[in-house]
Each structure stands twice: as C-alpha cells, then as structure tokens.
Amino acid sequence: MKRLFISILVVSFSLHLSAQLFPLSDHYVVNGLAINPAYAGCQDALSATISYRDQWVGFKDSPKSYFLSVHTPVNNDRIGLGLLVEKNSIGIFKETSILGNYAYRMELSDGKLALGLGFGLTVLNTAWNELVAADADDTQLINYPTSSVLPNFSLGAYYYTKKYYIGISMPLLLDYELDKSTGKYKIDGNFSGSNYFLSAGYEVGLSSQVKLLPSLLIKYHLNNTIQIDYTAQVNLKDRIWMGVGYRNKNILVGMLQCQLNYQIRMGYSYDYEFGTIGKYVNGTHEIVFNYVFKFARKVIGPRQF
Image 1 (cartoon, one colour):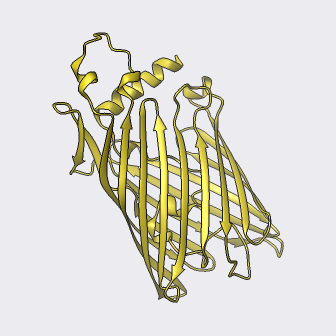
Image 2 (cartoon, rainbow, N blue to C red):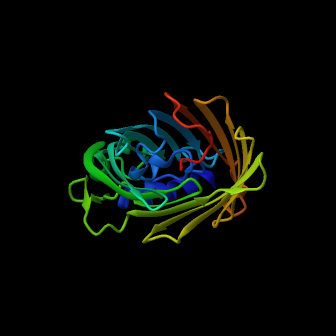
C-alpha cells in the first residue's frame, strides 16, 4: 500500500511538477521568510533559521523539506535583505530553490508595512533511472533529462504591530510543466500551480507571566481544496511556548518552542493524521532552530511583530 501510494504521486508529479512541491510548515510564525519575502529584516537584527521536516514517516520516498533563511535590516531599518535556500523531495523528484529577498518597510498607523520581492532560481532534478519501466527500451525515460534550471520569484506584503500581524504572499510564484515531446520543463504561464498564502496572528495578555498567541494560515491553490491551519500557543514567561493546531485535512499538530537565551530559539512539532494516510504512517516531525546574531529588542518571543 505504501509503495502504491508513492507510485501514484510519482505519476502525477511527472505530468505537472510545480509549486505543488511547496511544503507545509508548522512553524510559519518563526520562519516567516519561507512563505513571505516581505518578512526580510523584521527581526531588527541579523537572523538565521534552519528547519527540517520529515513528512509521513514510514513511507519510503516520502516528502522531506530543508530550509535555510538568513535576513537582516539595512539602511536605517527601511530595507530588509534576505537569502532563502530550500530543498524539497518526494520520490524521484527533488526541487531546490535559491532566492534573494528584498523588503521595503514603512511606518503605517501603529505598525510597519513591508512590501517584499524574492527572485532567484529553481533547480529541478528527476531520477528517471530509478523508475522501473514495463518496456526497458522506453525512449521517454531514456531520453528525458535529469536536471532543469529555471527562474522563479516570490511576492508578499506584511503588516505588523506590537500586538498583531497579517501577511499575504505568493511564494515561488512560477510553476513548471513537463513538455512530453522534449522531456524538458517549461514555465506554465497560467499560474495554475501557484500557491497563495494569508497569515495572521494576535497576542493576548492573560497575565504578567502568561500570554496567548492564536494564529491562522490559509493556503490557496487553484487545483486543491483550501488548506487552513488554526494554531494557538501559550507563552510562559517569554521562555516556553506550548501550542496545538488543527489543519483542515484531519491533521492535529502539537508544538513546543524554547527560548534558550536572547539569541537561540528551538522548536519541535509533530503532526498526527486521522485520515486514511494516518493508518499507514508514523506522523510527521519538524524541527526548527533560530539564531539572532545581535539581539536588539527588550522583549523576546516567538512572534516576529
């Protein structure tokens, strides 16, 4: 059953490889640059984040994602610059994107509005030789190239105050389609494979030592149902955050974050699936590590607003 499921995914991805590979993330509040280029510089200091996500543990060739993001404010905090490197894989498909990010921030009402642009390259690698063809002389598999390098870009806007934030973004906006006649990927100009994100969060003070941070992430894709993540985290003394979330695809998420000192934050999350897939997998694990090189704020917390 597990191999059959992955085989079905491989067939579908070979026809249209696009932003479909864009991964899920439970820690989008911490690693905002992964979904929104306007997030660059918002930590008011040079910041680096790495994360790893192992989805559907128990499936061979299941989705795996790696992220590295580095960003910093420059020019009196008006401009934020960032670098995002991400690698996603499923079955014989691997996708690596490297994007530079630029954000311009301006004062607006009680907060700041940032407009962002990401631009770079996406490298698509397909191990066609790992497929077992019914016809050993199948020319399509023999002649298909294993690697393609194509341009990509992201757009986003991010507004944040001391109490709440809201962002809209279109990460890795371009999607690609396999040309069966040449075996090469080409840009699909109708944006049917693009993802659109809306994120928002609000901090509620329950006491001097306890705060509540409810947050929301909505992901829209033209060919899929809307994905909605509902998350609530409890902040204890600005040191420990315990949270629970629900994704509207029968997925329950538990998460824990710890601020070790002013510079270092670590987080872990576990996804439990109630649906059909949940019968065959051991859940999904995600870890995140954030380091701020020069602490600039008087208050520490997992929120970046």
